[in-house]
Length: 164
Ligand SMILES: [Zn+2]
Image (cartoon, rainbow, N blue to C red; front, side, top):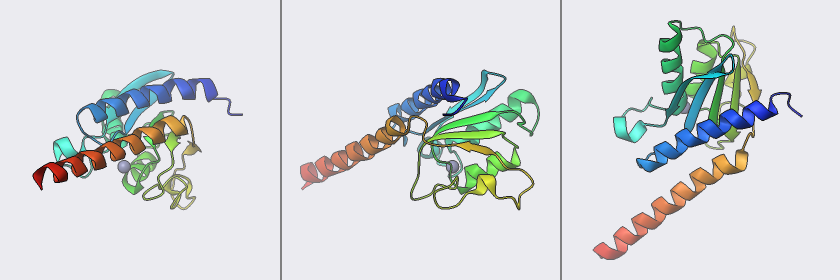
Protein backbone atom coordinates (compact mmCIF):
# COMPACT_ATOMS: atom_id res chain seq x y z
CA UNK A 1 0.00 0.00 0.00
CA UNK A 2 1.33 3.41 -0.95
CA UNK A 3 2.40 5.67 1.88
CA UNK A 4 0.90 8.52 -0.13
CA UNK A 5 -2.53 7.00 -0.50
CA UNK A 6 -4.65 9.49 1.45
CA UNK A 7 -3.09 12.59 -0.03
CA UNK A 8 -3.07 11.02 -3.47
CA UNK A 9 -6.82 10.49 -3.27
CA UNK A 10 -7.33 14.01 -2.00
CA UNK A 11 -5.35 15.68 -4.75
CA UNK A 12 -6.61 13.39 -7.51
CA UNK A 13 -10.09 14.49 -6.52
CA UNK A 14 -8.93 18.06 -7.22
CA UNK A 15 -7.66 16.95 -10.63
CA UNK A 16 -11.05 15.34 -11.29
CA UNK A 17 -12.73 18.66 -10.43
CA UNK A 18 -10.53 20.28 -13.09
CA UNK A 19 -11.55 17.58 -15.57
CA UNK A 20 -15.21 18.40 -14.85
CA UNK A 21 -14.52 22.05 -15.67
CA UNK A 22 -13.13 20.93 -19.02
CA UNK A 23 -16.22 18.83 -19.65
CA UNK A 24 -18.46 21.80 -18.92
CA UNK A 25 -16.98 23.71 -21.85
CA UNK A 26 -17.04 20.74 -24.21
CA UNK A 27 -13.39 19.77 -23.81
CA UNK A 28 -12.26 16.19 -23.35
CA UNK A 29 -12.36 15.91 -19.53
CA UNK A 30 -8.77 15.75 -18.39
CA UNK A 31 -7.55 17.70 -15.37
CA UNK A 32 -4.28 18.22 -13.53
CA UNK A 33 -2.97 19.81 -10.36
CA UNK A 34 0.58 20.34 -9.14
CA UNK A 35 1.32 20.08 -5.45
CA UNK A 36 4.35 21.29 -3.59
CA UNK A 37 4.83 21.11 0.17
CA UNK A 38 1.29 19.87 0.54
CA UNK A 39 -0.25 22.79 -1.34
CA UNK A 40 -1.75 23.10 -4.80
CA UNK A 41 0.40 25.56 -6.73
CA UNK A 42 -1.23 25.05 -10.12
CA UNK A 43 -4.44 23.62 -11.49
CA UNK A 44 -5.46 23.31 -15.12
CA UNK A 45 -7.63 21.40 -17.51
CA UNK A 46 -7.54 20.49 -21.13
CA UNK A 47 -8.12 23.52 -23.39
CA UNK A 48 -7.15 22.09 -26.76
CA UNK A 49 -10.43 22.86 -28.53
CA UNK A 50 -11.07 26.26 -26.90
CA UNK A 51 -7.60 27.54 -27.64
CA UNK A 52 -7.06 25.61 -30.86
CA UNK A 53 -3.68 24.63 -29.52
CA UNK A 54 -2.32 21.11 -29.85
CA UNK A 55 -0.15 21.70 -26.79
CA UNK A 56 -2.92 22.95 -24.48
CA UNK A 57 -3.00 19.74 -22.43
CA UNK A 58 -3.90 19.93 -18.74
CA UNK A 59 -0.44 18.85 -17.56
CA UNK A 60 1.45 21.25 -19.79
CA UNK A 61 -0.71 24.19 -18.73
CA UNK A 62 -0.28 23.23 -15.07
CA UNK A 63 3.50 22.91 -15.42
CA UNK A 64 3.62 26.34 -17.07
CA UNK A 65 1.54 27.87 -14.29
CA UNK A 66 3.64 26.22 -11.58
CA UNK A 67 6.88 27.55 -13.13
CA UNK A 68 5.41 31.03 -13.30
CA UNK A 69 4.26 30.85 -9.72
CA UNK A 70 7.59 29.60 -8.40
CA UNK A 71 9.61 31.80 -10.74
CA UNK A 72 11.67 28.78 -11.73
CA UNK A 73 11.72 26.15 -14.45
CA UNK A 74 12.66 23.46 -11.96
CA UNK A 75 9.72 21.94 -10.15
CA UNK A 76 11.84 19.94 -7.74
CA UNK A 77 9.82 18.35 -4.98
CA UNK A 78 6.58 18.88 -6.89
CA UNK A 79 3.98 16.22 -7.56
CA UNK A 80 1.85 16.26 -10.71
CA UNK A 81 -1.61 14.72 -10.44
CA UNK A 82 -3.43 14.06 -13.69
CA UNK A 83 -6.59 12.14 -14.43
CA UNK A 84 -5.23 10.45 -17.59
CA UNK A 85 -1.82 8.95 -18.20
CA UNK A 86 0.46 11.63 -19.70
CA UNK A 87 1.19 11.67 -23.43
CA UNK A 88 4.70 11.91 -24.90
CA UNK A 89 4.70 15.71 -24.71
CA UNK A 90 3.48 15.97 -21.13
CA UNK A 91 5.69 13.13 -19.89
CA UNK A 92 8.58 14.92 -21.60
CA UNK A 93 7.66 18.21 -19.93
CA UNK A 94 7.50 16.45 -16.55
CA UNK A 95 11.04 15.14 -16.99
CA UNK A 96 12.33 18.50 -18.23
CA UNK A 97 10.77 20.39 -15.33
CA UNK A 98 12.17 17.82 -12.86
CA UNK A 99 8.82 16.98 -11.34
CA UNK A 100 9.51 14.58 -8.51
CA UNK A 101 6.48 12.34 -8.85
CA UNK A 102 3.68 11.86 -11.34
CA UNK A 103 0.39 10.39 -10.15
CA UNK A 104 -2.20 9.46 -12.75
CA UNK A 105 -5.65 7.95 -12.83
CA UNK A 106 -6.66 6.08 -15.96
CA UNK A 107 -4.14 4.50 -18.32
CA UNK A 108 -4.18 5.68 -21.96
CA UNK A 109 -3.84 2.75 -24.34
CA UNK A 110 -3.57 5.09 -27.32
CA UNK A 111 -1.06 7.63 -26.07
CA UNK A 112 0.17 6.87 -22.57
CA UNK A 113 3.88 7.42 -22.14
CA UNK A 114 4.09 6.73 -18.42
CA UNK A 115 4.18 2.98 -18.72
CA UNK A 116 1.54 1.96 -21.26
CA UNK A 117 3.11 2.56 -24.69
CA UNK A 118 6.46 3.48 -23.23
CA UNK A 119 7.77 4.99 -20.02
CA UNK A 120 9.37 8.34 -20.71
CA UNK A 121 9.17 9.21 -17.03
CA UNK A 122 11.58 6.53 -15.94
CA UNK A 123 14.02 6.10 -18.79
CA UNK A 124 17.45 6.11 -17.19
CA UNK A 125 19.03 7.58 -20.31
CA UNK A 126 17.48 10.92 -19.35
CA UNK A 127 19.10 12.93 -16.59
CA UNK A 128 15.97 12.94 -14.48
CA UNK A 129 13.41 10.29 -13.64
CA UNK A 130 10.04 10.83 -11.99
CA UNK A 131 8.51 8.47 -9.50
CA UNK A 132 5.24 7.16 -10.87
CA UNK A 133 2.04 6.16 -9.11
CA UNK A 134 -0.66 4.88 -11.42
CA UNK A 135 -4.30 3.91 -11.09
CA UNK A 136 -5.35 6.44 -8.41
CA UNK A 137 -9.14 6.81 -8.83
CA UNK A 138 -8.69 4.92 -12.08
CA UNK A 139 -12.40 4.06 -12.46
CA UNK A 140 -13.68 7.59 -11.84
CA UNK A 141 -11.10 9.13 -14.17
CA UNK A 142 -11.73 6.59 -16.91
CA UNK A 143 -15.49 6.82 -16.57
CA UNK A 144 -15.39 10.57 -17.13
CA UNK A 145 -13.78 9.96 -20.51
CA UNK A 146 -15.94 7.01 -21.49
CA UNK A 147 -19.12 8.95 -20.72
CA UNK A 148 -17.87 12.04 -22.51
CA UNK A 149 -17.19 10.12 -25.72
CA UNK A 150 -20.45 8.19 -25.45
CA UNK A 151 -22.41 11.44 -25.17
CA UNK A 152 -20.45 12.90 -28.06
CA UNK A 153 -21.32 9.93 -30.27
CA UNK A 154 -24.98 10.22 -29.29
CA UNK A 155 -25.03 13.93 -30.11
CA UNK A 156 -23.46 13.26 -33.49
CA UNK A 157 -25.96 10.52 -34.19
CA UNK A 158 -28.91 12.74 -33.26
CA UNK A 159 -27.58 15.49 -35.47
CA UNK A 160 -27.29 13.08 -38.35
CA UNK A 161 -30.83 11.81 -37.82
CA UNK A 162 -32.40 15.24 -37.65
CA UNK A 163 -30.56 16.47 -40.73
CA UNK A 164 -31.55 13.50 -42.91
ZN1 LIG B 1 -0.34 15.57 -22.92
